[in-house]
Length: 338
Image (cartoon, rainbow, N blue to C red; front, side):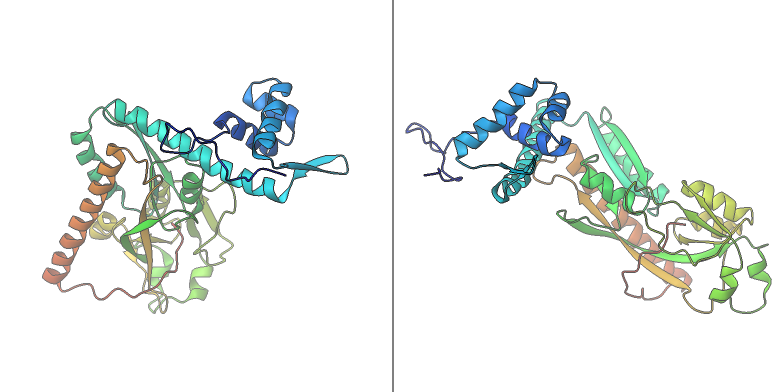
């Protein structure tokens, strides 16, 4: 009779059951599936093919479960193998995260923090938070990925970052609401759209060049917010897009607080759209590994929340003084990051 998958060996002197399968064996199983065979897995793991084969066979023998079955001349996962493959991935991710957290804590904090931030988040607000973080952790290196749309989501899923500010919270992650952005369509004052003498329609916009920031995702790129104009310029940097708009090379949608200086100086001007004049998008703060996050990651998350809260209070006071502003419309539509 096959042994139960969940059955573990017990030591009478231990209070917890001891696992009988080593991490190296789970890693071998994952590698065989991901690499497409034992030979390829051996190269990936820098081990001999016989060692990888033995590790998987021992895993099957210890658990009493067949992981692979032959279909024709090809070995594929059994239904039980599919379950073990998925759970092994979670186990290895947790083990890696735990080891990294232990190393960071042993050193008194993280040596490096990796942060992915959607380009629509105000750069000045991000740098304000990072400057404050630098005063509390001057020795911590910060690696900033300035991403667009699905690029932030990909960085989280691939575990490339410790924190992320994103409009898209991937499945399996939890995000806290951080900031609602108010988008407006703008162009240089000299742009023909400002000389029509009437409200600008969607048809008008499609006649002119739209400036778009490319989705930084490598898979499943999005074209959110593009109006279908043939004369489209796609760039990879927010600053390039804003500079092009200031030069009168096209129109674009930006978060109002991202182009606040250009609006104040008059180098960019809001377009008088007939409809769709305002858009809103919500950004979320995501801690990639909340159970294993180091003190630096938690501190930076706290600083980001405080910086956004302080900005929100300041913006509210400004609106009250000037009499501008209004109630934000509710909605989840994610405009382009132009």
